[in-house]
Length: 225
Image (cartoon, rainbow, N blue to C red):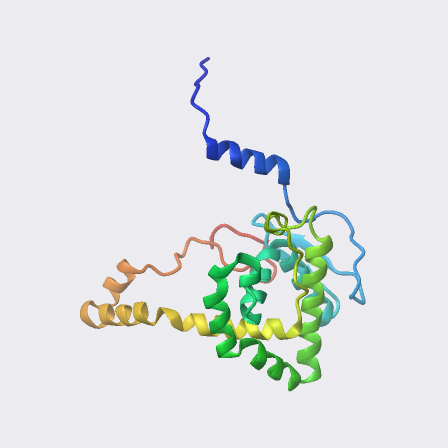
């Protein structure tokens, strides 16, 4: 038997102190929760990768449950997305967020999202509203603690509104166009050297990785065999 000793690390001690002070923040995945906003019983199962599988008896409850899982797993990510859409990121992170806020407001992400929500049909509205209710409750009661980022920054989660969801879609659409230069580069490689060269440079999704479970198959299969 042997013991190895090493010098202590200040960053390591700091991280250790944070872990002790903040504790683990894990979603509640076992047991029964009484939640507002649904009309029937919903079963949420997590597979080996933590991916939720939802059994619901109606569509609004299914969307609520999906939002609930998002609130459990991604509360602070949703918070930052909401603040970007509303042009209020600087309130969270300080002056560094001002350029993002200015761009968001000039683009009118929140303004156009609200206008879009107002012309949605009843089904579209009820779907988004159910999802938002789920996110709010998932963040509030779906985990043992608030997300660590909220505690470190001493802020409370911003209630998600339906227009925030539509604004997030607009933001994602805008960001998807930001890789135009790499897409042109891929096209140049394809035209000059052919598809094999492009696959070697930028491999596609490998055959051996898991895909979404087909009906009747166990969740989280590790291969297609």
